[in-house]
Length: 387
Image: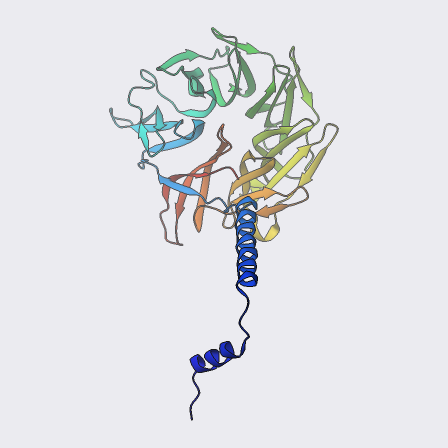
């Protein structure tokens, strides 16, 4: 005779003595109370937050355009700056270009900068109505929330000012770059730009990065070449509210050093990044990142197995320092406090160009990428929401 699972359960149920109604009610009430307690605990228990993912937006960039800077003023507002190649005459030439972000897509801002040639190299945002960008031939443009206006960063008898980086807010905005063959810095005083003297190293020099931590705490960095054929050396200066002074730079013996970015992560924590190598001999670079602890530079290296050729962008993500670089593997990395670790990238093939953090803590990246190893990556921006 076959025995079904239902008959076994029916037999077992019949063998259990009947319970008094009061006991059953008590047991049922206890079970209900336990269920309510369980539900309440589940609701009050902290939920595990999902890991933020890169959100990618195609960028309307043609072959004759380039993006050099991002200045984000919010989740649904910000600007990209760079250049486009004009073909309006017998010889193509660069003209400044601006794009705006509306929270869903990028669009070129027609007529943002007119009547001049050259490129915009950098941008910074202090708020929705305070965005600056700088570039070639002393060009500086400002967004006041309503429109763009032009001003000129003064040069010298040696040439026009070329602005490679800009930072600050209100009447304390700094632009750095070079004039002729020498590094240069200028400050916006609320109504005009004025050049400020620098303690220059020997030979040719330039400043490629600047960060403003406060009115009397501004850092700038770049590199110099003491004589033709000499190694490129790092060059670091600090503004204390009244004058610029040189800061002892990190040492990389027998190597060229090109400084590409600087980050002030906190009191007595200043980071430099870029590339080292013997460029004149092999053209190869290794990424470097080093931080100043208030008294000395402490060099770090990216993991050798996933070493980008150089770090050209640093940004704070929460309290962590993140860096991006150009290389074959792992272009996005994060500092754990003791070493660099690979961080997620938007695409399998990612070639970062510009890296910044928005006012809401969102990490922004412009670059070229592809979901596979095919040739011809497409321009994009990606945003990684704050954790």
